[in-house]
Amino acid sequence: MLKLLQPIQLGPYLLPNRVVLSPMTRNRSPGEVPNDLNALYYAQRAGAGLVMTESTAISPRGLGWTETPGIWSADQVRGWQKVTQAVHARGGRIYVQLWHCGRNSHPLTQPGGQVPLGPSAVQPTGTVRTREGRLPLHVPREMDTRDISELLDEYRHAARMAQEAGFDGVEVHAANGYLLDQFLRDSANLRRDDYGGSPERRCRLLFEVVQAVAETWGADRMGVRLSPTSPSNYRLSDSEPAALYAVALQGLSKLRVAFVDMVEGSSNAMPPTHDLDWDALRRHFSGVYIANNAFTRESGEEAIASGRADMVAFGRLFIANPDLVRRFADGAPLNPLVQDTIYTSDHRGYTDYPSLDGDGRKTHS
Image (cartoon, rainbow, N blue to C red):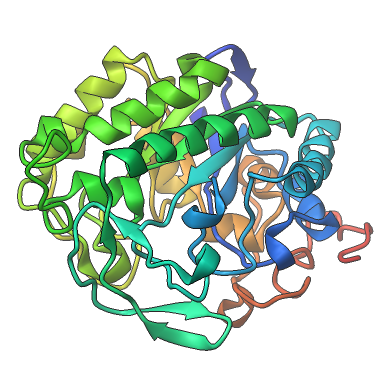
């Protein structure tokens, strides 16, 4: 049997395999509320040892753009309950990814037209999607200590809502250029207080968020996503990522976080900001290491067999192949990905990819 398909203990759960559905924004939640179509999408992929949701905003201020789900309101909790129940009915485990976009938002999306928050008032390049089309990003308002205290309360609230929604655990999103990643990397964080400067200080907010969420979940049902060298969201980078992420991983180990979800390299068309020794970096963390980014059946199997990773996350392969785990087991051919429908608003390219059985279930609602 493939080592990818062998069981693994993750916190309190014995998972049936080491395949992870990677978190992927799909823009199918109108009004920021999960719906029946989302429930079908995740249920179709419940064969993964661990299902991760798309990025899910913890608060109205955490939202980056519309039609991505949140988890701060009763309506959103009810929507997510449909999703978790559908995944559990097929024997799966599902974690929600808790997300705050920080400066990668726009006043048109923010409550009351406010300027988005960030660690420092640094002008980001690029644009963001709004209800009036793509518009340039604003200089964020630098967060003060009151903002940080409110942010921690928003994470606590989202953690409680996630438990009410029936999730099995949570992942804190600290990657891909969003708020916690902005605090980590010195191209965005120019602060001179206890949240800026040294790697230890730039990691402080991440550690405080983890502790806040653990008040509800316990660290054994939590993970953190990191992306040390991915130039996500307009070339966010750090001058010394090996040193920074060694501190981050050592701190997460001390907090006894169950896993890290590590984006290795660049997750987009731009080259990675640095070349890192992922084996050496991984040794700073004592929990389950999920390797993530452009893995195939063969490279994922090699990563597990060599001991370089404990689990492997698959993104685009899972979009096109809802029964990816079975296809891996059978050595079956894979459906090709249709690029043009990754972010469309309906079932096309979302729930209509065929399974090996032809999938006679309804593909949309």
